[in-house]
Every structure is written in C-alpha cells, then in structure tokens.
Length: 137
Image 1: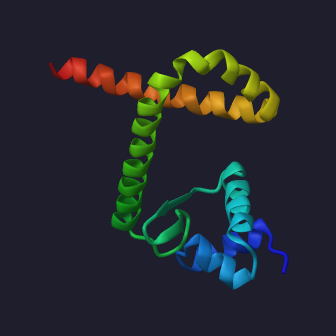
Image 2: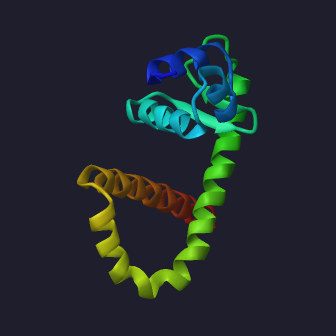
C-alpha cells in the first residue's frame, strides 16, 4: 500500500502515534514512515517526538501544558544528541579533511546547506546561552 505524507499528517492530526504504529496502519515499512515524516518537517510541519510517538503541534485539542511537556522532552533529546556529537567530535578531528570529501560526495548541495543552516542555528543558541551565563555572573 502506498502512503502519502498528507495521509500521515492527517493521522497525526487525530492522535499521537509511534513510527511502528503508523507503519502498521498503512502497511508499509518504518523507513517509509520516517521518509514521510522528514518530508512533512521539510515542508514546515511542526512535528516532534517523545516516548509516546510523534506529535503534530498544530493538532486540535492540545493544551499549553501538553505542548510545553512535549517541547521539554524534545529539547532533552536534542541536548543529548548535541552532547553525543561533542563527545564524538574530539577524536574525529584528524579525519575532518576526509570528511569534507565525503560530505561533498555523499550529500547534495541542498542537504549541505540545510545542515549548515542547522549548525548555525545551534551555534547561535549556544552563544546566547553563554551570554546569559556571563550576565548572571
């Protein structure tokens, strides 16, 4: 069965589902659902995930508390990813010249631009936090 990103979005407008639940509903593999979710996010849909599955933030009936809690869990996950990247980055430094070639060969220009924009946003967030800490001391 073929599934569209719009059909996945319509399901998330009704309820929160995990990737495997959506895959079972549409009788497709989890990778297909992952690709549809990526497509929705690239189209600007505010979809985040937590231990209960994927949450479309524009879903009707969400309370401010539910949205706040979902964001809190998502930010905790994001911070753990960033910390993991920091831990992995140190020993990888000598490999950066080879990594440049891999990025050029394996990623499209649009993918590299998107990655660069995300990195700039994270850098800006980290700079903001550092400035706040300096102001507090």
